[in-house]
Amino acid sequence: MTPPSVPTEVWLLAAFDPILIAVAVVLGFKADQAAKIVVAVIAALAASMLLGYLITLAGIPWLAPVGREHPSLMPVRTIAAVVWASAAYLAGRARRRAR
Image (cartoon, rainbow, N blue to C red; front, top):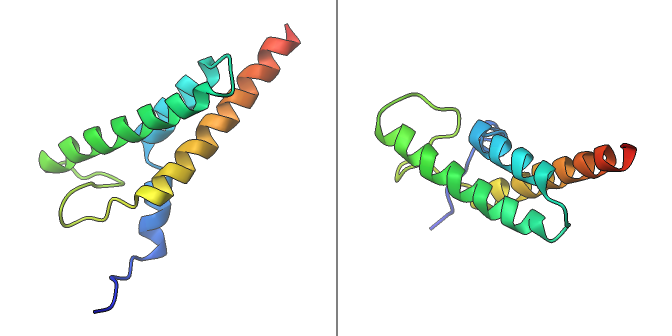
């Protein structure tokens, strides 16, 4: 049995999920310690998966649908959440230092 092939566009849509980005950036920006990036990543993943599933379940077209017939692509979402939260943390840290 061969593993299913997922188009590159689907991978990119999972990485640029608006819910994932919003939660990761807000929590990453507010973090005052680097260890809190882990909390931001977990919260972003949970919110992204839960709201994406509910939106898909409601039948509303969504950029990164989550469901049985759609791949969740958790490794891509995880890496994207780490990148977004880390970038926001560094931006928030630079802003706090500039004051």
